[in-house]
Image 1 (cartoon, one colour):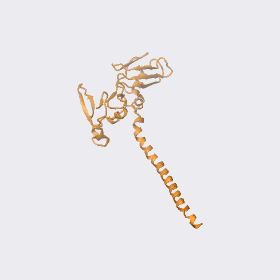
Image 2 (cartoon, one colour):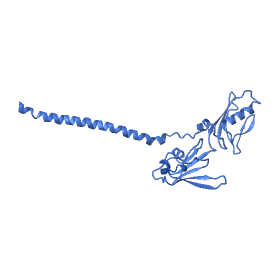
Image 3 (tube, helix red, strand yellow):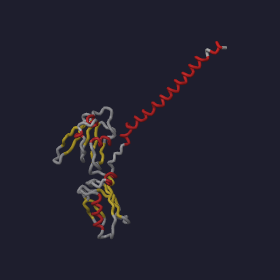
Image 4 (cartoon, one colour):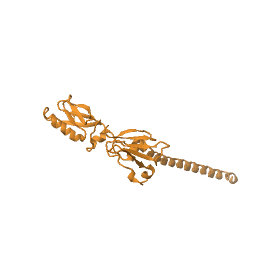
Length: 222
């Protein structure tokens, strides 16, 4: 019986070794999943970046200056006939019932609101007026070339070149990110070209190239 018992020990050792190996391998596979899932989050972040250049940004930003082409929603409390959406004409004015033309371009929403309220007091006692920028068309910039979503974007708040590229969804595969440039028109009508090297700026170098965009700027990604 002593001789018969010897084969069982190696078999038990082999079985235990196999169990230990399977448990170890299973644990290693489980540990390998979490780093991979964690790496996905930063890659998805640009697609969920709040492009925060909508009309709501203009209304939360008291410094936003209304310009020609903007669409305004004007609400006069308890006065349905006076509550309406009006575009700012190219001459910078809007037209409202009772008070006629009102200068809107060059004013922030709060100041235009106060102006309309003052003019309506000749007709409506204690008029309550709110002015909301529905669509921003006077201040825009564009992104063209090898980006995921080329197009025109509202410039509702201070926006850098990096911000603008993020709004365009990032680069396509063959984008020449070291040769990006910004086209800008000077007040005299001349167009200037400003260089932007994404690789350098994204590493904290040449930060002077990451300029604040101006209305009418075009970011070109070759």
